[in-house]
Image (tube, rainbow, N blue to C red; front, side, top):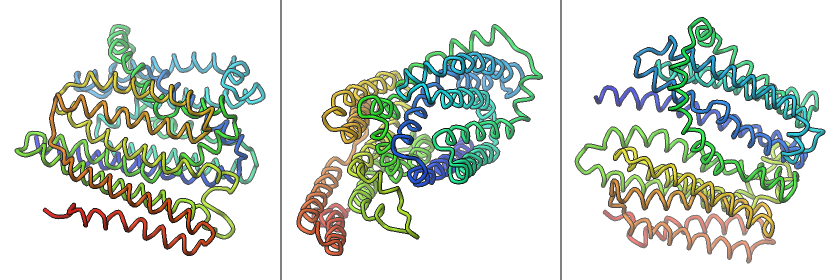
Length: 475
């Protein structure tokens, strides 16, 4: 058993590395986009990619998850259990993309980007079809424990995407269209990299009976997946409709600066799952899990404070005349601390996920995700009009806070963990003290950059100092 868990932990680390690398490489495009695209263009790009995220789930309708289940049951990764879902997804993707392609002008108008951007919708249709065909082969690599090939193909696709973006936007000045053409090129390249697996699918048979069973199993993943996606990306198109394309572009650029906590939460997620699965049956496991939450809260809060205090200084730093993002986007920097806090609470949500996984009581996850989606949409609709993109950021925070709280409440019933509430309260108090000091420093030294920088450093130092004074580090 422990040998299997070690294999799981090793492969999780490899997949986690690929996820972190993918997000980092995509983050590198953010500064590039802010210099090559006007805020309105970037707003159109961010909104369309949000729709792509939703359609990715529709295109797959759970077939990748169904493949994992049925192939594992049959004990074979190839055969009809593989060829059936690949063929089904290929055909359905071609049909859906053809519809999107033919109605691209109308769809562009309905999306709020204007009929003149119908070509972008056509590119999205091609991208979606190519990515959907690759999904089940990627699942097969996971099932066959070919972690490094999985990582290699994904990374190669991302590198192609970054290179195509640089060539099309910097050299050919292709604008927003160049972003989506680069996406099509990267998706096509990924499909070519996976050609050995895909070819074997079309040399196998198609079982109608097996497809019916797979569709029945995979269909429930569609609504739950869409609900989860609402929490992640619904704010972009809502901002586009309610505040305009330029606001959506500013929002997207500054939202992406929250990658610092996003990466921390993502890395924690990859390490946490094998960790608690391996130790779930050990004596005193709950106490260990409680301490993990305390340490995550400590590290995550410090990172959130540090980036929040110094983000304006980081962005304003000039490197050969260039900044982290173009000055045209600096008006949205006030949302960065909110986004950082959102991912901090997402990390709490990941921590509380141990309870349903260990206990097997996973039904609450569906309504918790749905509740998070409802909070996100409702808060966006209420807050964007009076507060603009700041309201959208707080809507994201509200949704992740709601999900963390609801999962915490549900977890207490299925798998109670004795969390260190006293230490968590001290972290909160110390963070508040540091934050108040930083706010006061900005008010007093706003006209003296050097003094303000020092004052913010002192404010950050208050966090560990207050914790030490409260006895946090004593055993």
